[in-house]
Amino acid sequence: MREQLENLVSELKRLKSEGTESVFIEDETLQNLRESVQKMKNSKEESAPPSVEKRKTKSRPGPAVNLVAKTKEFQIAPIPPPPVVTLPAGDRQQRWEWLRDRVLNDPVCNEHLKPGKKVVFGVGSVDADLFFCGEAPGADEEIMGEPFVGRAGQLLTKILGGMGLKREEVYIGNIMNWRPELPTASGNRPPTMEEFNYCLPFLRAQLEIVEPKVIIALGATAVNGLLGPDPKRRMGDVRGRWHEFQNIPLMITYHPSYILRSGTLRAKRTIWEDMLMVMEKAGLPVSEKQRGYFLTK
Image 1 (cartoon, rainbow, N blue to C red):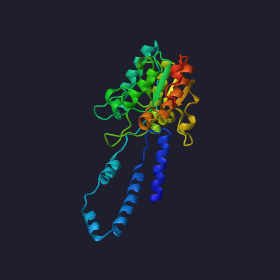
Image 2 (cartoon, rainbow, N blue to C red):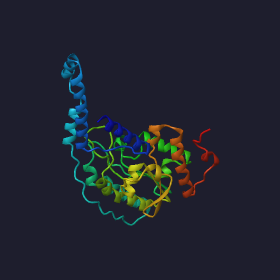
Image 3 (tube, rainbow, N blue to C red):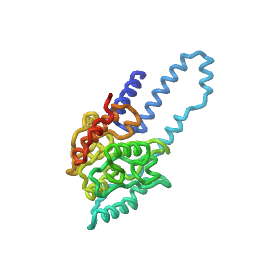
Image 4 (cartoon, one colour):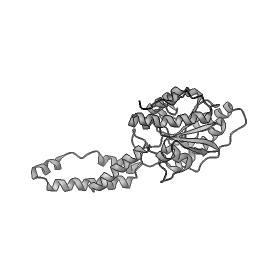
């Protein structure tokens, strides 16, 4: 069992190095894992001296029991088939305002919100050349009702500044319009494909309105939402290469949180090289100073 746990830790580290931001684990898997760990613990207690065993018997139960109970009771409301979104006539701003009102008042989006939280819709310029696409709102985003306003969002703003751009000059959105539910207040999980598929027509409509020159997919989960899941896909293999979504050039790069986790110059340079390619594709000026950002001395 110890070897299996070590393999699990190694796999999680590998996923993290490839840019995976979170992992959703089924209830049954969690329960099996807890039972296996408990067996190992019991085995150690049986071989321990009587005085030690007695003290452990009297110890208070840990929080894992309550967590299992909460997880079993937790149920996600059913996700209906994807909606059909037909944009009305009008200019870009008028169509965007119609779509924003449609999403903010969508009954399914609102059904999946926690009390007091907000549906999140895209922000920025409807005439933007660059469309940054994330996966789903986090805790800060569902409070503000705006994508990328937390720590990762602040870092994205700095990345844009390095590109010579401001947030209001690009378009920033998510595939998901609500934060995927969890039984706890903290933490995040990747959206299910049913959740992705329901929200995807709203993202497609935003792309139809903005008509950007380039889409930038931020993180592995966003890529899975746009291109569909692929167990063989690795961020290290697909980032920094051109793909296509809705006949628009698509650049895949790591989520800004990748830098927050690693904090290395190499991580910063990796994302920055992707941004240099985006700038060139969009026809934005690139100075020699910008080309040299985050290079090792």
